[in-house]
Image (cartoon, rainbow, N blue to C red; front, side, top):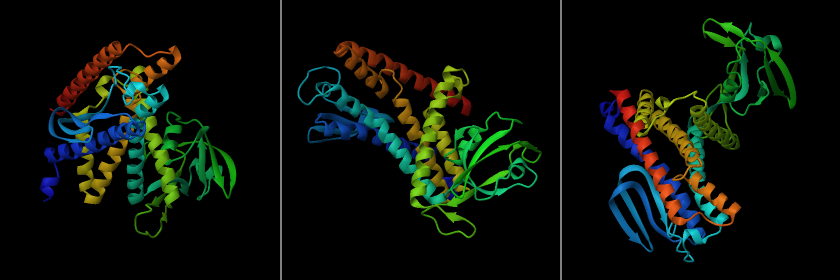
Length: 363
């Protein structure tokens, strides 16, 4: 049985399609839900693109599942034709339309938060509380004690363990400014890193406490995280995903990253498959947790990308709404339609190009 679940490309594709389907459905449902609340008629709610495999008319809306499992759409009456019937999209106020457009990305952030909460609730997380200090290193010499909770490093607020590494990136041998909370009081320390031959890098010399998941069993030697603490950490983790995505997008403009560093559908399928297989070497539970974690990252990524202010994306349409509010009238419907189509073709072509590069990397 393990032979089927390990190293099976078809299984990786199936899992990836399920993940994409959930994320796209959530995104489009966000638009759908708010549009209905604003009394906008939904002509079609589709998961996937291309020819329809299955479709069903229910009330005034056609629900369809389409052949290409990439993307989807929530087609609202009068999005671009400007008919101005009482229930079309363009008949609504600018603020109402912005709410409808924002609902998709916001739903992706909510999905990311829920998935992260599920994973952290099952497997736990590394906290910002210090579990132990390493003898002979700067943390011990400065007076850091087990039980201290790190508040900031080099002036940067610390919410989660990953923030510590980010705050120390490129620090090298320079002293590290650390603020901790101890017994309700705040203490400031300057710690000089020391080189560790074993780790082959400079360390300040402490380890953080691991807290077991709120949904997991009690484990001797570990503190179990509370539900409120888990929710708080999940929120920080979700914002961390968002920051990572924004940093990646910014890196393309600063030339820190190139188009070769981007991954499309093929690359994402491989990442999902690899994380699933890595988990299966431990247990089925670990494999599921890995996939859920990757899905959370992808959901946050999808939310951020859709907010990029270019036509054909939610962010671009929101930008047009803002411009309309400033100038007092909407862009000509025909011109907006052409603009949306041009950028849609561009994004589709870019996706195909990146997918081709992903394939060449695998060959």
